[in-house]
Image 1 (tube, rainbow, N blue to C red):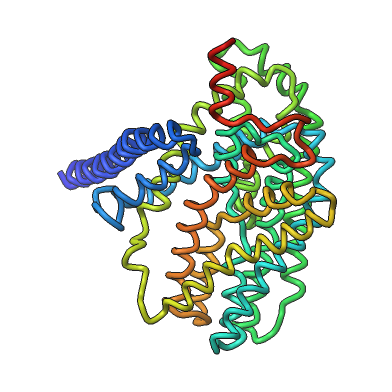
Image 2: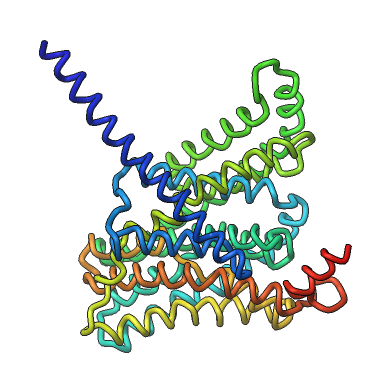
Length: 422
């Protein structure tokens, strides 16, 4: 009887988790898509509707969006699929040629963003260790919103779009290094060069190894998969590769999101990938909706604002934008992207998410920062994710860069008139 009772309790608990997950998916795909439709009809990227849905449904307002580890896991799976698809939809040759440029831009924008955080901290009288963690909070880019926006407006494979992707991939490594370095300074009272070197080497070897090796063998893999008689062998095969590489990445202390994009890039020009790519795109768009809604729904953005820290919040939010604008913008401009191209890259690097929160969490864990810094990280994550989609669309559709085709930039109304006449 005891065994039956335990099994029954486990089943009830599992069903409760399942119901919460179903409610989260149901709310995301109904309210989220309805708000997406509103913004799309007014010419804005659809992802803004997901973010607004999270604000309305979640901890900031209605408190009806469920919370839980399972929902977070499924949401992160959704954004992993989105980055996997982004890799599949990237032109392999062009991306690899742009990787050197992305590395140079990453150095500039990472140092700039980090420096702004340190300056804000020191200017407000915080100790150096706190200021270093404030720099770490501002450093990392979260490319998820930018990828979704670039997909929405058909600009993912532009020169600026590929630079944004390349920088975001490398940015995860620099952010991880900064967090490791900051933690070692606080805990060990010294900089652990050996540990930092190991992180750099492992990340570089893993990422390049995945891209180059899997790309080298993607033709025989696809040939074997297409010969299989089981249902959907190609999709199953490449998704299995994507999933297993994510596991290996985590074991090596590298973000699975980095592995997801690398796996997609490695298969991007494989023969016969097109049909599978379209199926994965549909799945990624649907599943990533849960991620964007959950990201905002899980945080009480209204409660995060405390009047006594108003100046601190304002300066940190301003620094979040200024760091990427002056760092990425200036470097890309000097590299010949032109003014508009440089602004496009800088705006695409505005969003913060996981590493911003991770840096704040680590800072609190080692006693380097207070609750106000964590709340600043939450506000930065929300505001940069809300602001980026409309700004990015304006930069790509209203202004012309040196990489665009000759001729006037068509407006939304102009495109509509030509379509109707056709």
